[in-house]
Amino acid sequence: MRASEFFPIPNIEEGSKFLAIQPHPDDIEIFAGGFIASMRDKGKEVIYVTVTDGRLGTFDPNITPGELATIRKKEAKKAASVLGVKKHIFLDYTDGDYLPHEELRQDFIELIRKEKPDGILLPDPWLPYEAHLGHIQIGLAGAEAVIFSIMPHFKPEGRPHQINFVAFYCTNTPNTFIDITSYFEKKLEAISQHKSQFPPPVFQVFSTYLDVKSKELGEKKGVEKAEAFKVISLYHLHVNVDTVNC
Ligand code: ZN
Image (cartoon, rainbow, N blue to C red; front, side, top):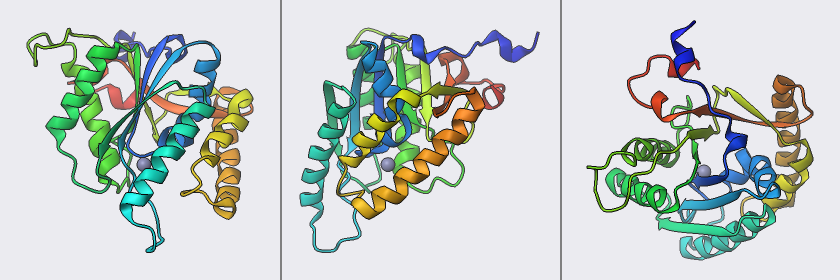
């Protein structure tokens, strides 16, 4: 028996309630839209949490950041509803600002203790070459919130809650591949709602890339198309030297 086998990797498809956290409107659809659609199709509960307002996401100097934030919130609501998501929480942090770690972590702890999900989806903060600090900060604050949510003496208002798994998306060390063959078109339909980010020529190129990428990931599981996650439990998130290889 290997030491890493003491800490089994949870099966995320067995979860019944998920907290799906994204730094910007569109991250979840791009990396986990097929998984979200499949879970909703099976009657599972998914709560979306969009952390920043995405006001910097343009190369067009004629649109103001405030206008873009308003547009992106509408697009995010449409995209989530395409996937069947009914509850969408916007934390409205300013995109591009250095995010306050303790405040963000506390927001996540409160959400975890209030909603009591089985699992949480986060961007992988340890993705090499990730240069957008917001993705790193949000992934780390979310992971730390998972540890602290279970501690009764940490901010004792709110009852402790233990999450069964963290599924990191946008990861280069996946250990879980989810068959999204039947949901790939729905994923693309959700992404296409983000018209400010994917005008038709961009969408055409990007959807072709996603088609190729999902097939590449599908080969790992023996299915046509897949999404990839690094899934771990609470016990992998602190003082565990095997997590990187699990
Ligand atoms: Zn993002």
